[in-house]
Length: 284
Ligand SMILES: [Zn+2]
Image (cartoon, rainbow, N blue to C red; front, side):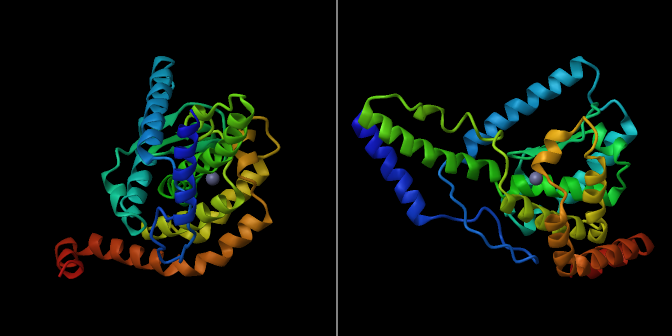
């Protein structure tokens, strides 16, 4: 048993020392933060896919899945537009098994689980009366969490913390529950403030490149703040405080990506006017 702990400790320490890599490229926003990544993506993605499958099946059985065809189509279109831009941050994301579902619920909520499983609740769309830009802002933010693998990072941080507990437990003969480390806490721990802010900024770039106006993103969070007096959706808003820091950071970063939006919009307009010529022009 002691050997196992030594082995795990060695892996963890090696991981911490190597430190750490980054899951994504830096993009126009210049995001640079190395991450502690000890836990594998595969196990987390598999758990997330299973959880999403259950949630979907449950909603389906209650007739609460994608009930409004027009709304589902709108959410999926915006999602696909954003997903098409993810290669800027990581090349492998285009091969993920992305899924986008709309769940009937008054809750103000949206998520993108590890590996690209996106859920948007009707509560956030209807109660906040989201425009396409605002919907792109919230979905872009959630997609950024998945691209950055924040759940995996949290699980890795927790693994180190559990390791310390377990090492102490091994010495004292008390079971520290090391084997639970990868499974228990991953999606349930709140993201750190830093993770939230970098998802905001990465989300801005994704939406800008996809042709949604990043200048309208702060409005989403203003609406969120205004709605925070309600009962439903408090969980999302407690983990996503729409405060001055968040909104100020967003305003600070919008100028870095506004030109990407202008370019995407111009390209869209040109392709509508002259589809054939524009194609040739953009792909010499
Ligand atoms: Zn978030």
